Length: 482
Image (tube, rainbow, N blue to C red; front, side):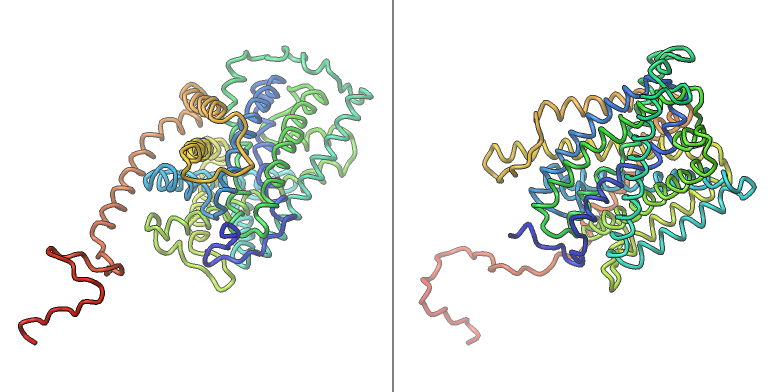
């Protein structure tokens, strides 16, 4: 089948088990392991409702992605879909917004690694740990896709096992009321919404960020064997695991300890295991959350390298980002993202306490743009199928187009709410016009460069001349110079 062909330059080395774990691992990062602690401290037990609402949105985004991937697998993912179903300008804008998402997500991940590491070495500067983590993930991504896939498989597996262990331990604590765990904690310290419902709603931005990375499975499609069999299973697997890992974990966190026990300075999972009184439990969980953050940062380099190469091949990104190594690694795009990660290391030097919140607020804008692009492209795919222009895949977005518009409306609400939230979110909101201007200028330069580029020689038949056309077997008339 044509759709099973591998994109030029890439090698189909990712197996089904690796793709499924990349999909799961991409959805489990610092938004859950670190960010949920700070959000619980701010919003209280009602945070679980925010995770549930965002989880529904994530479900529809994943199903929209699944239909697009089965229509045409590509490592360009939503960038290529935006080009096909909306236009070149949409491809350009969504691609760069996705890059901004992962560039700042990587900064958040590096900040989280440094924050976790301070549990053992509080006197080591935060930026030093962040720099060491950056060197590690850069080396992994530059060596080979096979190494990335295998390492990410084990990273993701460790995250899944840790969350599963927490779910069992947390359930045991609640059922047997160990350490005063129980339903009464939902109303402790001021009630289910101790600071009011508006604060709960305001947390949507951070929770949306927590779900970022679910789209990685679509980018991996260009390097996956047996796409039509692997992808539906991988996408459906992400959906139900999100419900269990995210909503289930946050609910248990609110039941095991009062919400006042959590803070943004430590992973809430480490807080829970420290409360058990087992000396090594908190340290073991700290190893896991460091692995989770490293894994997510690793995935960010992987995805942006492929997205930037897809854009560079269309002249929409610097030409250097299209370069591939002999190991089929797009090292140019990876290097560009790593350079921004290095700027994040400097941010950890300047404002170590605010670096994480600023990074996730700006990254959220990229997440919202990516999700919105996927939802809108699926609407266009459906319309094209209804017109008989393309065949619609059997793996479809449920409730389309109504579920698309409802989810898009929720994403728009999140953006508006950022203007009334805390300072990092307001910084991100007021940066929207600057981002829009930068992308518009970039697109103008791309169009201008294309206009100046020499046209390739025509390869088709010569244009028809006026006058009667001689029959095919007629002898061409002699010219006056013959």
